Image (cartoon, rainbow, N blue to C red; front, side, top):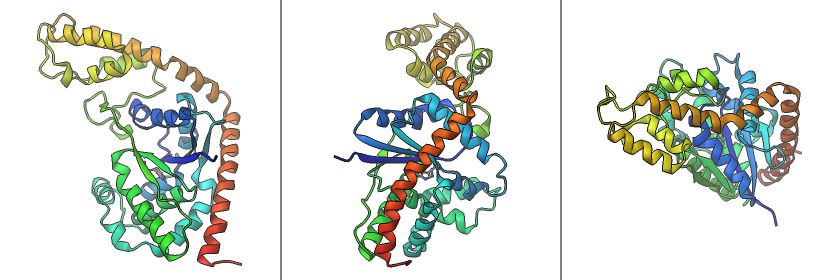
Amino acid sequence: MTKKRILSGMRPTGKLHLGNLHGALENWVRLQEHGDYDCFYFVADWHALTSDYASTEEIRANSIEMVIDWLSAGLDPERSTLFVQSSILLHAELFLLLSMITPLAWLERNPTYKEMKAELAQKDLSTFGFLGYPVLQAADIILYKAYGVPVGVDQLPHVELTREIARRFNFLYREIFPVPEPLLTEIPKLLGIDGRKMSKSYENSIYLSDRGDALKRKVMAMFTDPQRQRKKDPGRPELCNVFTFHQLYTPPEEWEAIAADCRSAAIGCIQCKGRLAERIAQRMAPVHERQEYFRSHPEWVREIIEDGNSRALRVASTTMAEVRDAVRIGF
Ligand code: TRP
């Protein structure tokens, strides 16, 4: 019996923060642990170019750093195939073929495209590559005949487009591609320390690599319930970002007690944050150990990626032979 394939990718943003960990990465690890899936996870470095073509200095270093965080969070290269998109040139070939059959209107109506273009107004994104990147994403997915694609809601339009493109290819040429399912990831709403969405560009993130005093300082700086100015004011845990973190890092009996003590003003924010900092440090200790291990052995990370690349290439080559045959292109 062949296992169902899972595929997902991340842009190489460099070191990952706790939002990335609980939003995507833990889900990737869960799918790996499930046992019935053949998981393929890749660094979407060509995708980084679609919006950051003018500043590419950090893409390589960021890719390595991100893979180190994947490994440190529990992805196991023996069980999951970890690879780099730009190492598998067949993504580009399939992208080209899919671009021939994708109506422009499908791309122009994509809500994520419209949003990103408006949000990143300081960059000139009126490019062919940016409009077409969902087609590249479709190629990423169907090249490996993925059954399931774990993503957050923002990526749903792209998976929907992938399904339409796969069906169109199957209809025009030959039934080659399974139509992939989006596997929606429930994302706990972890905000940054300033109360905005946690994002590298806002400089409000707690990173997987933050530890010791640096970690403690960040936790101590976290925004809490704005109406709780003094310790004697009763707090509202349901409106407090620190409490959301406690629900992830602290055992239930303890965070329930913390909530009650916050409401009755028996515990102050400083004390509450101190306990959170300890819990995060405890939970992250094994992650930090693995980070140290891989950072001091970059050659092993390289080897892991090269091994993943060659596994990915094998699958991709088989698909592309079928694709060329179906399209009747090439000798
Ligand atoms: N576009 C995705 C993001 O920005 C990354 C990505 C590229 C991806 N190709 C993919 C995700 C294929 C899932 C499947 O997060």
